[in-house]
Image 1 (tube, rainbow, N blue to C red):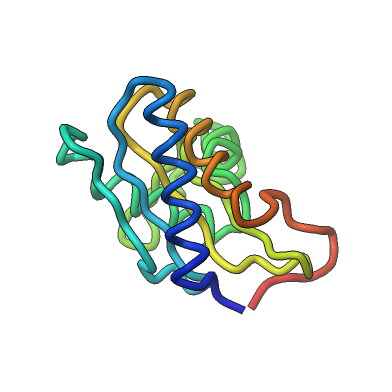
Image 2 (cartoon, rainbow, N blue to C red):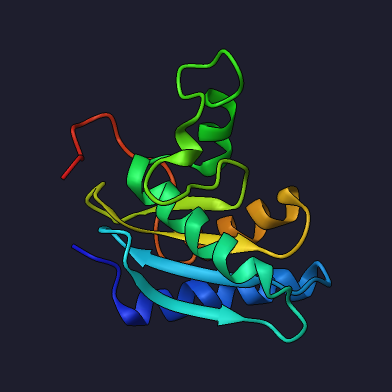
Length: 144
């Protein structure tokens, strides 16, 4: 099942609240399980360049079923995924993209956040994801 528009809006609201708490401006993207944009919000004064980054973080996370920071660790020089960021019309391999997993353990989408430090991006994305589901996939096969 794909993330619904109601869920996407709840995730964005939770992420915005966390961004305000951190006193930062963010771009927040939610994609469905196919990586298609479901909802997007650019807070006032958020960087224009963060629009594309937020969307690509969400797509990267849903394409590979893991947090973008995890992919970043695996894609360092000499790592098993070195160069992966050049695939799929460009991926983002630093923190701020997080899968959204429903109550049945199925990845229903992902959220991507950009606009501050990668640490803040991750915290804001996590707040959005956890508002509507889990962030870790179970061990059973989930790939589509």
